[in-house]
Image (cartoon, rainbow, N blue to C red; front, side, top):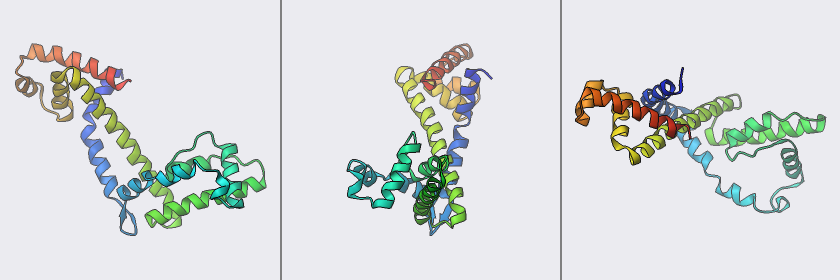
Length: 204
């Protein structure tokens, strides 16, 4: 499938992505909380960011400093969200038995944070992580489409309207042409140019 066809399929999938996002956000994860609640809470990391600016000995005990050292030794990236942190920790390859114990302890600590937020049973927190990850991915896809259409609208508002009506709303070509006040021949020309431009914006 070429890039233009893939882009059109992305636009056509917009409403499905929105519906799926709403469905996941409303899913219960325990203690009366929804995925959306946990996700928003996971984004509130201001205190954590402030602590990272201080020397670790000021707020970590000796065991926690060992865990921090393990993370610095093996991790190449330090995501802010707990779900992403757990995924990174699980990929650590311990060099010895002591490190293996530290990895397990670090995983348990992160898992407990997720369980406390979500009210999830120990065997269920990975399911919560999976839903949170999907929600994050859906948001990225929708954001890409929204921002690309906004950029297109700033340059060619008629092209943005054409794409929204034709592919996101699923209106037939003659309806879109009528809404834009153009004839079929002009519609075909505009559609071709609109797709070309949106591909450029979505490829940035």
